[in-house]
Figure 1 (tube, one colour):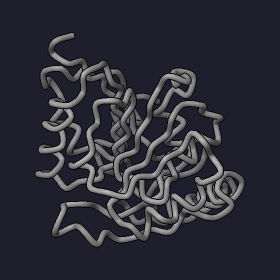
Figure 2 (cartoon, rainbow, N blue to C red):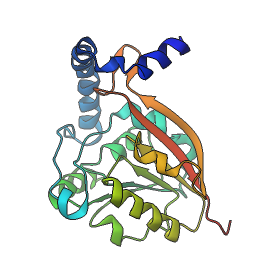
Figure 3 (tube, rainbow, N blue to C red):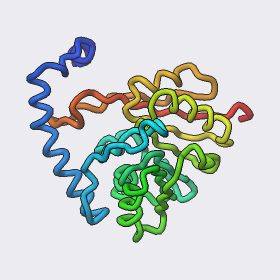
Figure 4 (cartoon, rainbow, N blue to C red):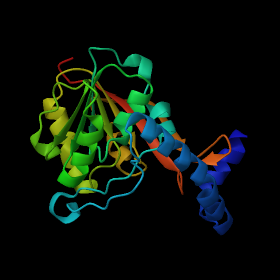
Length: 229
């Protein structure tokens, strides 16, 4: 099975017309289930994609809803205690935060979103949760030193991502868990980079008979350890 799976990705069989048709059909139950979870946690759907208004000016990408199962696979909920501070950079409408709330995360959960219209949606549904804060602003102007866990679902284009890595390296003063989703290109900049230690890497695509996305999306979990540690 391992060799078959490796061959599937190596030969890019997921690009075939048949696989694309299957993905469209078998993503619908996942999307439907996630919307039901949205409505339970947020009292509204967070599914709709919102294009970025700041791609040219800030190198920001659009707001897409990360599947609940992807967040659950990436983040060890049990490792988040009341002393943890988790932040989703480029949180969009707050799907990652909703997924953690769905699993009863008790730690401080913060979302940073540049698009005011989108941030307002996250602020509205998260208002009843005392452990959630949504910040509307430029992530480059917000100090990241206090966070123990940082989630990045490709919030920046390549050059801005490189700059943000340098910002993190300057500001993080403690060991920090960094979760990268859709990192098949950007994640490679962290391989063998000083201070960054790969903990786990996987692919989100097909799971238990259903598709999570139209094409395989790699994710990586790193632990950043400042040089003085």
